[in-house]
Image (cartoon, rainbow, N blue to C red; front, side, top):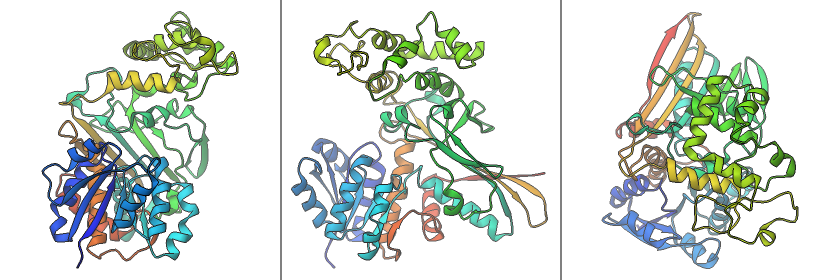
Length: 472
């Protein structure tokens, strides 16, 4: 049999464990692992000292011919590229009839081409990472088990957080980046949060999801809360619980994070666009902040204190000063850098003297938060995942099921996030190469075929759920 080529597109922070896992099994799978990235040195660093691996350079946007040559030569393609490039990868995979695997959410754009994927007999597997992915498989496994034993599912809530481990939690936000910082800053902006609670459908507009948080009540982490993910409604059917009265999926954050982030979002201070005159006029200052928090947002004295402490840590006042007066600290030409609307602009990046261009509030926050909230080389991250399920047992008793997974990283690139994203995806690829997957089309890893193989394998790597039941 000819050697098979597994093309890994992207050598970012989530790729390490995936590449290692496949490289260790490359001989048995009769495969060569080609890791391609726009930064060739990154790709080389991921494959150094690993067997059956090669590094390559790739740029889907700038070198379409070279990119398509890589896809055409592959047996299957794993895309760890930014989400906006997945459709480009998908079209190339369709053109050369290659299966495609990602850890990212299945997009509406991908669903448009699902008929073509199915007609060509290809497998395009999405949402096979941590969240989404590991959350799906653990939830469906637990729910299937409960239904098989005669339980009626009344309520399902699932929450996941990429957090900082307690040993490395040393800033007032109780947060450090273990994945894409920009996604954290823009979280929730793509539409209202939708969920089902007590048989009623709710729509929660941005940024209210950071104010109306859920009390998750994790015993070992009492200060964590959940904010609602974009749309929980489809998961009633996807998880096989169409009669459930409550279906909620959310993200875990420290309570103080949400308290301080809501006013940032409320006043448009994390906007990726220019701010109009009405937003500019409503911005607080250091003198007016407490008054505006109390009177406009209903904050208590204790919550105001939290906001001040967390904003002080990031130096948010510098951003406010720049938004209110773009001439302060900016070295670029004011007239040439303003937009057509004289009352709208992107602020200068005051604290970073190497920059003279005018940038958006999102850019400012991203740079400042990376500067002060990144994991240091010795810091450990933590992935925390929990499923809260209410059932009626076969005996007619009300039961509460709490299933929790906690994994702390090893530090550096060997993070818990990289492990829980990379290993499930690598194991799905392994199953495909072993000929154990006969499904085709646009899929998520929701059935027993996936969780029955991947979850036991993950347990060998310390990734496992703890299930606790209370009655009454």
